[in-house]
Length: 263
Ligand SMILES: C[S@@+](CC[C@H](N)C(=O)[O-])C[C@H]1O[C@@H](n2cnc3c(N)ncnc32)[C@H](O)[C@@H]1O
Image 1 (cartoon, helix red, strand yellow):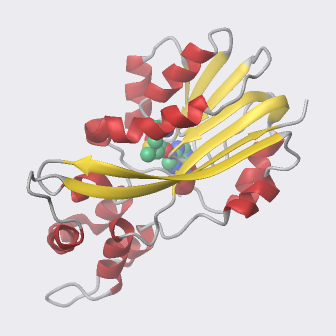
Image 2 (tube, helix red, strand yellow; image 1 turned 45 degrees about the vertical axis):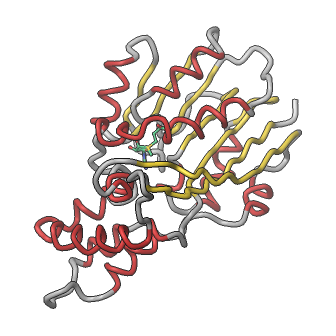
Image 3 (cartoon, helix red, strand yellow; image 1 turned 120 degrees about the vertical axis):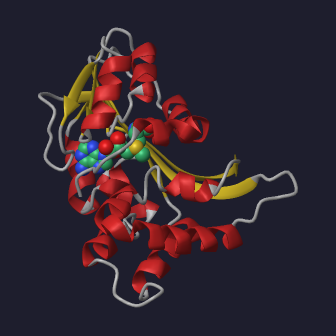
């Protein structure tokens, strides 16, 4: 699925929570001898791409993203880096890559059975593939919109079928399966972290999911958006009640993979 209508301001409303896993992923990348080509797949606004450039100042660093608004923000904020606007389903680097990094993007692509071996094949000897993807498909954040879309809306009539199809369902496979696709690896680090995100403001879980997961659904719903929003917000409030200070705790799990090719 191609990225659709991302809003950099909305996405960065929770910049700390969205950035932290990317920083933790970067910290787990082992030393790579004299990296020349570093690529950030699904770079978004480029704030993490800039950290890659800081860590490897001698490398050519390229951010790739399919969304024109995100790419425009990245170009404006970091004109010194190289930016490509392209669909990751078809884009290819123009040579072997020393560090191939992707934070919170590859779950937007389907067919991981072809994607991951393809990414692995781009690694230079000693090169590293580092990936983080949300992994909470059964959590209320994801289950509630699915439940709402799978029943008739209040007042009858079906939701537009494009909206039902636009909701990303479980994309990830077992960590061991990714491990198999990333072979041969000189080193392989796989882990999963649950962040207990403390969110504030009105309907913060709705604000969170409409900054990413629900973007294509809202686009496909068109004028039905308001009915959908009312139903999902009400269910989110029940699933994630605020505490006495008005803060909502949103558990959010993410899968991390770091594979280094043999030298
Ligand atoms: C959740 S954002 C992550 C952005 C950045 N990596 C970060 O961590 O802040 C996901 C990004 O992946 C991009 N994306 C999703 N599917 C894509 C595709 N098929 N081709 C290119 N970019 C895609 C979106 O445009 C979006 O900018």
